[in-house]
Length: 228
Image (tube, rainbow, N blue to C red; front, side, top):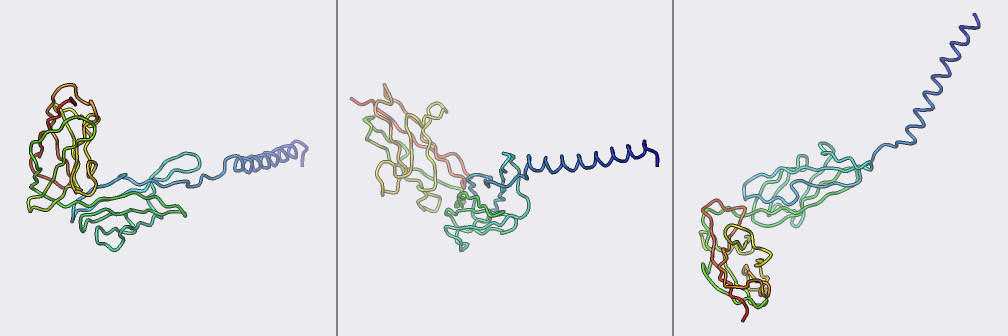
């Protein structure tokens, strides 16, 4: 065999060796990404009794890549887990509402678990708020309590959200509303103006929002008078 052929073979062998060395080196410099965390979507689902709510699990790896986990995910519910509020398909993550309430949704994969809360709401077609009109002096401590009931007279105050609006604009920073924020234990939705929140007498519209409601809009009026 000629010396030139030997040189070519030697060069080829050297190229292979160098290539293998580079591959091993690259694997050392760029280790395989591992799953670091799991987040669920929707973040806080709300759905009606008898309705289904599909869930998705999204993972973030050690290289900060985010992607949907479509296999190898185990789904379960807790708080409660007996199917009183909802059931869940352990393979697909699809929930079905059973009774109004809140559950914790868990998705597990590769030794990690992501969790969020899900709310099952009672479906109603009629809803009332009382009183429909009231007033309060803006001294920072007076609040306006409201009670919300469905068409059958069931109290659903703890399930709804009240928003103070003025000319269709959200005024939650001026008149925040929340469940039992005025007097804990009375079971009402309370709107509590911040002290000196208004400089003149102002009439706000208190809008009721409830994800299980499909009827006409429901609201009340709240007159806030400046602190003397």
